[in-house]
Length: 345
Image (cartoon, rainbow, N blue to C red; front, side):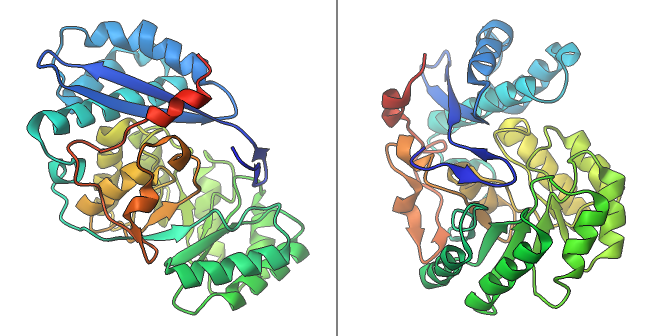
């Protein structure tokens, strides 16, 4: 990465695991997942040693293949490496399907929206000083993005000052989102929200530990800010538990973590059934396709240029005034020739 990025934990390396599938008809597909800092070799080994044998000679229909792989890996668990690996394979199978029938991914999913609004995260890292945040907020508005997300996790006094400064720098029609990255206790999160009761905030993201469904539900009852959860969930069950507990207002599945395209669609359909909006986490080159097919996705997250650096055609090609359009190429349209210069193994 060109620069470290900071939340309540900082990182300076992202590992991308790319999976290629080949079908009998000669049409291949590419999928991928990622880890922050480490773990890529473990995911690659899981794909090669555990998942690949279960795919050989079987149907390449994505949903059926995902169901087979999940059934075959029951005893490995439904979180972490297994779901990250299955996500990459599922994405590759959807790409292969699109290439075989000559249709872009968004059309395979029934998508008709050709312009997808986005909000920007890259301007709001925790290590930025207040002046930089304000400058970035002004840039967000000028570029036409519908919102800006900033990290919180300094002292409450610092966070309050920074949030107010950014909110004042944004036009009223541009949303401000806050991200706690699971760093707070329940009392700490309540105190922070209490200092910001007069500040318009679209949501507070992951204020507590990801699995603290009841804590998030209790927090929802005590503060006026919507709660966003899901980037660290790995399956539909976790989302269902959060929704059933009343813990969540904004659903944030990540296609590279939640079981690929098939898993993401299942979560989005569950959220739609409860009347909840879906705002996916990161991976905008894929989420732009998914958002096209689901009207309850108000916008996608424009996170950073890390993926752009390894794509043959970065998503900026499809950006106009803070919105994105899904590529028209068959499949998801992503190619990774630029990955070779970063290859570890």
